[in-house]
Image (tube, rainbow, N blue to C red; front, side, top):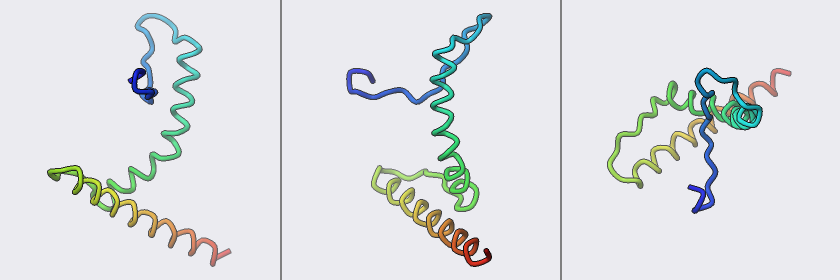
Length: 87
């Protein structure tokens, strides 16, 4: 991954029988912020739209995920619109 310029976004585990080093704790905390911001989107897509990708080919997968994103965005927009009209 490093050769291609990618950075791992996976949390690192605590070493067994040792305290977790401070630099790993800080790295995991930064990754948790991103996970917190986008986690509810994936949970909503999985529960509300029943998103479970089992198709053959990247084109169908991309289309199905794209449609799920559009549905989520529309539902979120309607929710925020209703919230603004009430206040």
